[in-house]
Structure formats: C-alpha cells, structure tokens
Image (cartoon, rainbow, N blue to C red; front, side, top):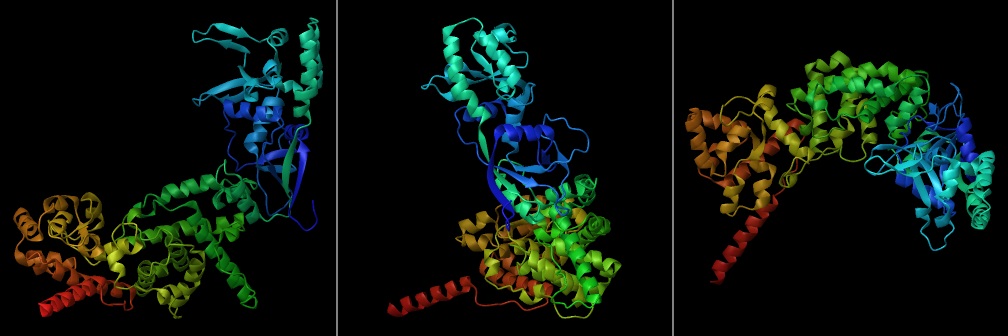
Length: 613
C-alpha cells in the first residue's frame, strides 16, 4: 500500500483472484445483495475474457480496522469452515467475480436465470470453430448447456448430447472450467487428439496458443482500500462505484457494522417501524430519520459530558446527525436510545394530532419529525405541560411557514435540539423562530400539496375549528378519515373559468379550504350563491348558522352570497395572514399583493383613457 494514501491501484491475475475467493481470503461484506446475473450476462462476460477485453476494475477493502467491522460472507458457491476470516472484502465487482468464479472455478453447474427470470443450471463451453474464426462474433463462441449437458426440444426429446468428454470433443465444444484445472485440461486434450484428426491438432494448437492463455493470464485492475479507510469514506465510495448494486444507505452500513456483534439492526428496525406505522402520521418515517434522532441525542450527551468535565466548549464534541456521525454510533449507544426515541416519535405523532395533522400526506415536512422526536424524547413528560407545548408549537409553525426544512437540514437539526431545549428552560428564541419569515406574496404561490406552507395552512384551519359546510360539525380526527376531508376550491374552477377569474388566483390557497368529499359533490361547479342555498336546503341550515360555518373557514359570508370574488379574495387573504402570524408568534410582511398592483395599474389605464377621450 502506498504510504500516506488509503488506496492502491494495481492488478492481479484472474486465476489468483478466483483462488483467493475459493480459499475465503476474499469474501463479501454482508450488506451486499446476492448474485443476480442471468445467463446472457455470464456469457457476455466470458466472451470479453476470451478476447482479452477489459471488464472493469474491482474494488476491495482490507479488513482489520476495528472501526470498520462488517460481517463477511463467502461468494455464492464457496463453502468455508465456520469462522474463516477474510483479508479482503469486495466493495465493487461482486457480480463479475461471482460469475467468473462459478463459471470457471466452482466445478459445478452455475445457478443462474434465463431471459424470463426462471432459475436454470448451466455449464459454459467455448465453441472452438467459432472462437478460431476471426470473422465470427466472439460472443457466439460462448455456449451455455443445461446441467445434464443435454439439449432438448419443446417435447423434452434430446436433440444434442454433450454428456461425455468424447461427445464434447466430437462437437468441438471445450468446457471452460478446464482452463484453470490443468490435470483435467490435459485429459481433455488427450481425448480430443486421440483420433489423429489433423484438423483437431491444428485447432488445438491455435486454441492453446491464442484462446486458453487469455483466460490463464488475464489481469484484472484492482483498487485496494486500506484498513485505514474511514467508515464514512467506505460508504461514500461504495455509493459512487456500485451503480449496479444495492444503494448503500447509512442504515445498511450500520446494519453491517452491528451484525459483526451479532445484532440484527434490520430486524430491530422492522419491528419498530411496524409499531410506528400504527400512527398514520408516521407512516413515511424512514430508518435514517430514526438514526438521525438517536445521533442527535447521543452526540448531545457526549457534548454535555465533555462540558461537565471542563472541556472548552469550542473543543467539546458537536451535536450532530450527519452521515459520518451516524456511522460512529456504537451498538451500546443505539441500544441506550432506541426505545426512548421510539417513544419520542410516538409523542411526535400525538403532537401532530394536537395540531390537527392526522396523516403522513399532510405533514408539511417529514424531516421536521426528526428534531421534534429528539426534543420530545429529551423532555419526556415535561413536554405535556401547556407552556412547553405552546413553545414547541410555535417552533414547529415557524419551521413550516418559514419553509426551513426543505433542503440539507442536518445543520438545522443540530441547532434545533439544544436551542429549543434551552428556550424551554428560559433561554433565547431558537434560530428556527428567528430565521422564519413569511410574506404575503407567498400565499399566491401555494397551489398544491407539494408545498409545506400549503399543507401547514390547511392544518391551521382545521386546528382552529373549521366546521363542515354540510353537517356543521367540527372536523375532528374521526371525521377527517370517515368523511374523506380534503382541500377543495371555494369558488369552483368551473365558475372561475366562466367568469374570467385569473386561474392563478382561482387555484391558490386563498380560494381553497377543507371540505368533505360529499360536500364537494354538492358544490360541483356552481356559483357560491347557488351551492350555499343547496347546502342550506339539504342540511336544514339557517343563515345565521351558515355564517358561523363560513367564518370558521376565514370566509366572509356575504362575499359568497353575492359571488363577490374580489372582496372574498381580499378579506380571506388578510384573515389567513392573521392566522399565520398567530401560529408563528411574529408579524408577516403584508406588502401590496401583485393582484392589487395589477388592479391599480388597470384603474390608472382606465382613468388615462377617459381623460384622453
């Protein structure tokens, strides 16, 4: 290994690599998925070797680093004594090396798949005549034969038989596993030449001089990562080079690390995930979210321990949940926090219910659950106190309407946990509250559920006690699911189109509210004045009660009764901003809307036209 570097570029013979695979010197890390190449892939690979074409580099990781411990497993087909420790692990090249090992070194039929994905067993041969023909397509020279070396037609009748060495020689089919089995190779040569056929002598001479040596001397480029390579670098390298394999997430790598200590992280998470998914709002929580929350709490504990020991705050471990830091989690730390963090996510679900967010699809940001769960885990029962809950709600809504959790958010998570905890105990406002900003113009861009602020405003309306247009009932958790509550237009799209209302205004969140599926069918594409009368008649609602229902949605009733879209839009815009301000606990920018500017411009133009005339 080159001094001062974590890797070395070299090359080794195919024969030596396959021999090391058979001995167990080279194995696979357990996070690698199984061998999946089909018959055609194997034939194409063997054809490349037969003509000395490159098949790409292989990457190996040296074992022996106590911080990068993966449970090893042998390459498919290799049988090893229990406990055989490898010297190298295959990071990239598993499919190629497994294919070559099974086809050339195993001495058994290769367990692969046909084009339809059906399992088949195959031996691989070289068609001597095609291989020696310079004009032929060399991929055609690689032949795969069933395990019994007999080819049958659709009726199951044997039409070609290569089940003995004599029959192989007669058909000019050379068994490729013999290239590395020299005694068997000599025996096959004797059989091939014993008939004294001059053409056989000539062909065998060319085969022995040109084709077989290409296999025996084939060199594979190797990139060898030394045992000093950090775990996070292994993860990053694997993700970049192993495009044909399974994506190596932090969870996968940590699973492999814990497996070295006989702990099945995958099984543990599967059980916790089933438990968390009982809450509809947690159904999209991922394994990495869970690990990030544990990392935040573990790193906070490490930092607090260091500070208590008098370590300079600038030198104390940071609170963090970046990938490299998650990879540093020990099994002991995971076990210490896993149960508590599971409860923390359940607390987060209850908090979301208190904010009238009942379903994962209505979560403004799934990512915000991570710091929330960590904070609630730390606070425990204290989080149920009204004053504490109020502060957490304000932090939450500032994150939503400030739209602060949409990108790379690990740094914000690391601030959230200590800052919110400190704020709750009397400290200053956290960065998320200070940084949050909402402006009037943002309302006009909120048109679909893809926006966190759109979903947040929807939840705020339900939280503030909106009443169903038809039943007059408050939209609760039970009603939300039973009546299929969703966001629908107040002035229907059809009405807006027929009356020349700007589609951008029609489709923005100002013209939408929480309405049940049944109520929305009654509304249809009718003018508000028409559907209000239908709803009143259908449900026996008087004008006074209908006014209460509409105002619960921040709608001024007369604007709907008289189909006054302009007045409706202006007043609801102001009412929604009031609710956002209340949730964030800070003022929002109320600059003139682009629609008002356009109206002023239109009025100005009208006045000028009148003066000109």
